[in-house]
Image: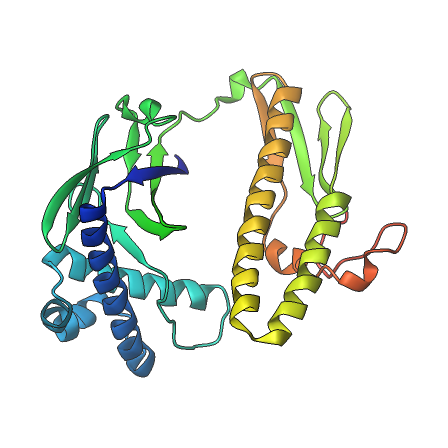
Length: 296
């Protein structure tokens, strides 16, 4: 199974945009309200939350049945994610205008329309179709999507899943071992005895520079600094996604069809890569960055 997230822009007239905004505000407010109760009670049992708060969520925020269910799932998932990532128990606040949509209940998507459930009923909206046609061939399955309002525009983030047949041993013609690191994003060694290095020093330098900038902005604690931090985080995410895509594409293009890629155990890799230190940016040679980093 392979899952990717398709991000498409939704076109909404002013009248319908107001309806979407009201629905998202109610959904966000309900999530934040329920988050306060979860924080106090530490109750992450969906059945218990449903018995205790379902009716109150619908009455207080005017949400429909499926919306209320989605609120509880969203809040529970956010707390469980924080706990699995090792964060201390703390109240999770819902500030961003987002709306989680269950496929075929809260939303549906065809080649022509995006249909979404709102406080005022279903509405149909146009969307950017470029790149989406291939997901309607019957082999892809749509999951729970997220409606996002950003920079005065509407976007839909949809996880799409497709089942791919496993590569049979008889069809493997080449085996490539991939070691991931910091000074080199990837080092490969294949069954033909060839080695390839994918330099990561530029990425390392950019990560360290961004970390130093974030530290300076965090000290200021001003609205403009917080806005700048959000912009910096988005830029970093786009840059990292692009670099990962480039390395992955280079690996696929370099090796023939039938290649089996073998990756190392990536447990703890995030904690290791986040230990880049700005003071080491100008040192020459290979730096040792944190325990657990490969330093390939």
